[in-house]
Length: 310
Image (tube, rainbow, N blue to C red; front, side, top):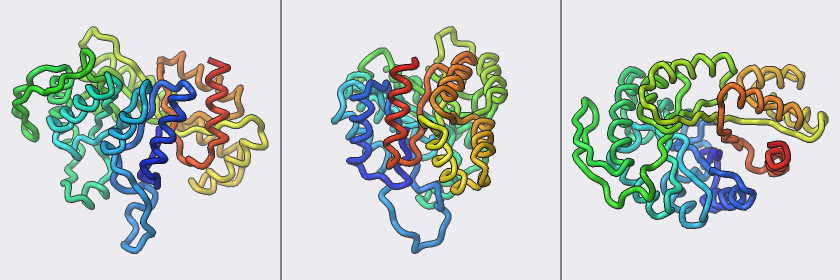
């Protein structure tokens, strides 16, 4: 899981996608943000960074890879008209022979909305927009004609080309109970950002209680992680991250705060135990958020751990 809005050129995204495919990962995702989240509210004059637009780079990923599944995690419904977004997804899915995973959410970052001329409505409105967006996107990405008139969006269209398979895999992202309630009957997969197990279990219950479809739904977690082969190396990584996030100077306390917040953090055996605990709780897919693309050693440790322990 990449965060290119923090500074990443298109070729870097492609390089990570090729690495993931070569190493046997099932998916490569990227965020759909229009501004860096670190300091995105700073005044003009802030040093400019490369922040490659999401769907343009997904087209490049489709062209340069052959096996790995890919998509946005997640696209805010307020950035693109849902009918157009569904057509974009279907086109790319057809071209890539069924590899697109379309993540769709309600949106949350007010700064990037306003910076690009988008209205940023209340949560209540954004939730309603997401509900209408899911209705439209779900139908079109199943290859159906959609005739829908809502309060915020409408669509009267059937998309060509059709999805390469029966439908485009649709992911709903959210850890607010009302958002989980909204997406429950539309998506093929529910993705939750770093969440403690207790919070996850409550959200999972909301999903179960509001899902009437009998089709199987996948459950995944996306989030940052820290893994190292030794305690010394882990403490070094913790010190850097703790300074950045304001977690204090004690590495043990910093690790506890990260784990309590739902992140995976530890030496290899601890990391594996934490993953197994989440698997037992019902999480099936893990999308590992790379916050420091330069720390390729940690990604290599992760890759080796996944190949040898699971």
